[in-house]
View 1 (tube, helix red, strand yellow):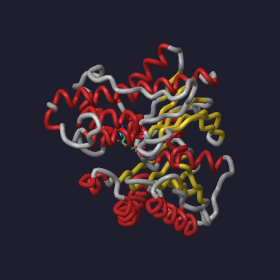
View 2: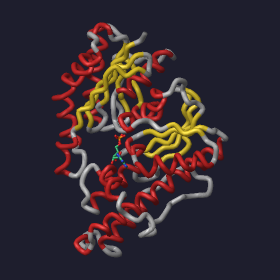
View 3: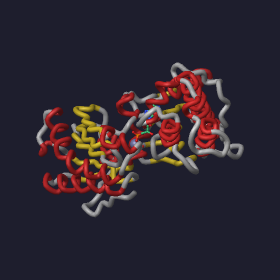
View 4: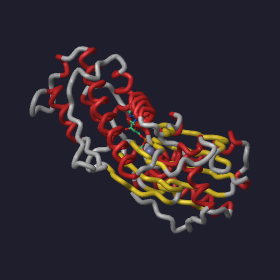
Length: 336
Ligand code: KG4
Ligand code: ZN
């Protein structure tokens, strides 16, 4: 059995987890900083990195305690070292290096987005590859073809805002609060997704890239009036807000599902996986499930706890990287 300690500090969650053999989650601690950032309406990088410094040691200790293992029983330390906020990544990378050195155990640098992509494999008896993986988070919207844990091809990505960023900004326009994704998801439940016709930006025929800045601007002008960036919200009732949230969400989900199907058609791969915070979205999960069922495709959805940022996915992918001989030296760098 191989026990991996995973560490995740790329953005606003301080997280540590202990995972056995890449699948068996012995503990997964996520200390969310949402309350620290709420009054600013978004993540403040300096506050986030300071909170990581304050919380990380306790979070790691709690992960080891809950798993019932001592530090020297850990076989390797995996850490998300890219991409993310540089000051935040540095805290996790430095802690991981210190533990790897003190325990004399391998250090494994893990790509945060690849960890989101691979997270669903932790719930399956066999890895789902080959698969088309849609990773949608606050920082990224990407489509991958994965043939193995270390054979990953980027098929398309966003040319401007990430899907989660669009949810967060639209939530802010509608004054629904922070973080925006869950707030829109909730408000949309009582809204009519056909109430407002927002653009579905598909880009060039065959393109697997995304663009979400147009829809964000469309919502902005719909609320404030053409060409305006403030005012007008007071004219809208609760039902109007719910309708806008539902219509926005429907447009984003239509694009995400359509592009995923384009990737399926272009590659012939018959398995689809989701990952990242936006993969927690109710409408995306339902619509992707319905579409895959209609087309006879296999869909694997991670549970909510593996969608948003966590360290179990970092330890999980760390295991597969260790198995394939990828370890990092103490010169491992944090890369924004
Ligand atoms: O993967 P994640 O936790 O962090 C990053 O790597 O960015 O993703 C966070 C993003 C945020 O933009 C948040 O608003 C969005 O995921 N999100 C959702 C939902 N839950 C979280 N978006 C839509 N619907 C949700 N239910
Ligand atoms: Zn993430």
